Length: 436
Ligand code: NAD
Image (tube, rainbow, N blue to C red; front, side, top):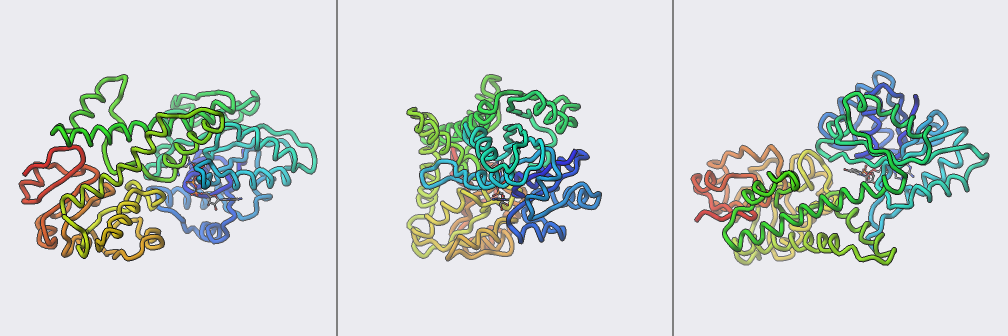
């Protein structure tokens, strides 16, 4: 079977490479010429562990190709995945501009029966919208099916998530489309991945419901951490005690500076906006968003409480990406926190293993360092914002020698407070008592 993936970003490139690995012939299409030219030369535009090897292997084995020509991709494919971005518009709704563009182009170029699948996260009703657009732009009336197949991969472990998902959601109205989709995903069927087969609207909603719920868990534990700090309790033990209850579960109960990334902030806003457009206030998720905003300010306040007024002071910051193992800085808490610290007069010197090229474009008045020790040189305090593995085994003896004061403010609770205390470091974290 031949398929086409339109939009070669974090989701599209992973989807294309993984289906190619399943033995399917995949054409990936993007309107970013530079990206396509690079990929045709084997240059991978993003950092995602294992992706480069997988892409290069499948190019070599002639199952994966890249083009800027959408018509070429559509004509040769039975299944067309739409994986373009759906960023927030000014009001926080999902901006469907790219999805609509692609739907028009598919309509214009299709030459026979096609299954048009949305992998992009799109609000309920988008399947019907795509169907209307395709029909309006067809030169000849070819039959087609619309499928919603939301993607749940996480950046940083995207290949593993795609190859071993907790479930595959397929929203479709026709048996033929479901059968072809199941065929595409047959390697996952063989490893007994649960398939959730629904209507298109329900599948679209599952994605928003999942992201809104996960974001809720994060904001919940962040609030818990803030209260723990006030009463002297340890949020990690609280989370463990809660998480062992099987009705709650242990995942996503790790406190920190708030959620970021290209999905949770925009998808929570989009579901709030969707509900509002239907005359319903989604109060829980509105509170989740408010708590998430406040959490970043609470982190800034925590830093100021430890260091005193920031004017003219140098702070070292480790980690810029919204999570480890990615170069993605979209909505990263580090950016907001750094901008606030700079506004308060701090001089920031920072290091991130993969996020610095993108961060340089948006962070002005910040010094980017060659390594993590450079971030600590002469700093009043070292602040950890993203929990990269590279930061787990810092030589604290060396770091102490570089820092102006031996103060570490860990916004991801990466380190053991007792061990840090024994190293002679004044250590502050989130929702855990500080050892004096
Ligand atoms: P991205 O911004 O990394 O990639 C989108 C790509 O689409 C870009 O390369 C862009 O050039 C291309 N594009 C835009 N308009 C196009 C057009 N008209 N024709 C061809 N290509 C076009 O986005 P992403 O992070 O991969 O996200 C894609 C979708 O998947 C979004 O809806 C997102 O919410 C969803 N999603 C993302 C993740 C994630 O972790 N990134 C996870 C699950 C779902």
